[in-house]
Length: 291
Image 1 (cartoon, one colour):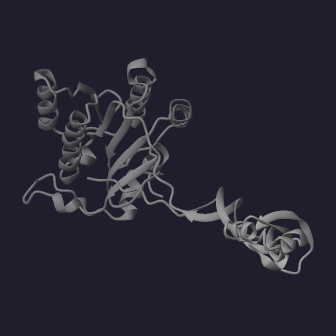
Image 2 (cartoon, rainbow, N blue to C red):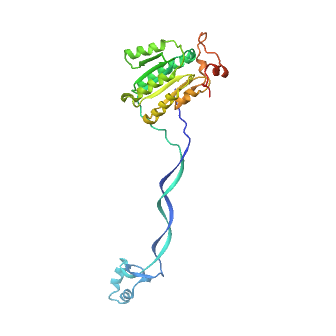
């Protein structure tokens, strides 16, 4: 399964270089303007009197013509300052609505916590077993270490290192063949997983929890998770196979993949097929589990 995170557009203000139109003064040549010195040109109207005398004298007329052709006549420089529109690059604060890219996280080990209580029998059991198999496959493809905690009550926690060697594959087979039974106690499993993340080798690990969410979370465990998320940047993702979201999964996980149609994975004729519980029955057997 692929988790797609929807991000809302964000309005940001940043400094950008934009081209603005500004009025700049610059000198331009204009006839009839004030005299601003002497230069050389072929402008007969601005010719100095000395050049006019050269033109009138027969002996100097050839020299005058040569200087005229070469734009070398001594002429008055006439100049005026005008304001003209000019494109000027400027730094301005521009407000734009943009889609920020998703955060880039470090890829570390993967810890999978799977609910194996009796409430998971049937289609939920097939789903969480498939989740573990896919987690192991993805971890191998991404060159990540994968560790499994299978929990039910406080005395039934099974641990396996899901490596791609003979021992790891045998551990996976043992998990896939196991039957689900017992109650649900997530506190000890989560505590063990978080303590593993606190070790140096598992410092960048992510935790994946697959459950139906029919459990409560003690205050001490919530506090431990909050501290770990703040100090270790811990991420916990849930795979929820249930008819409704529960407080337990929402309290633990940063995000949940909610499989609402989990019943379609039931095997025909399975004695462990899950009945369609009403909200009142869930409230009776799992108090404080429903939001």
